[in-house]
Image 1 (cartoon, rainbow, N blue to C red):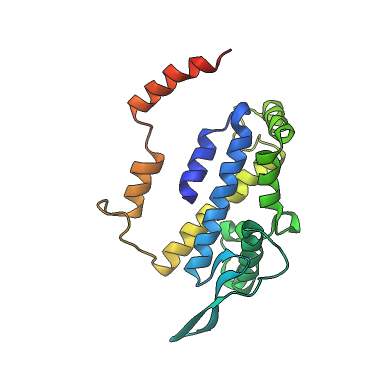
Image 2: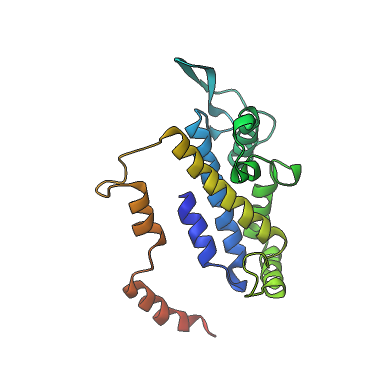
Length: 215
């Protein structure tokens, strides 16, 4: 899900949909950090539904399910970011790759910056229109991706770091699963279902439909 949202955000990089690329990058980061939490034994289902490592001693790994409110933030996304940043702070000593450093650090020292940014462009039309204007002003085809400015640039860089940090974490612990069957691997699934070009029939359908939007 994180990889898909990141890929769709990249595909949507144009003025008119830059606001939705921002939303896609947010969800790429959000799904990625939930993966990281799960990889290290934690999970946040909601403010009063969460799992933490109660005993992480070697050979005696204990998880506990909690129903008391976590922290003071409310809303499933805000509380997830709060819990995530708390968790990675405790693991910070060995999370030292460039991607991990970005992903484990609250953006502008604000734990809720990412969800606040998503809410702005997702729920306020004036912010979405401003995103389009900012894109047109800053876009330089000779300087991609560094030409993007402000919120879009930050969301792009942080989501990229979070997706790569989730990848790093999965490889670190040898995370594997059989949910990709009948495909052989996660890499095969991502290539065939996420990053391969759209089927020509779907591309033709889009070409036929888009003319109706010109009025």
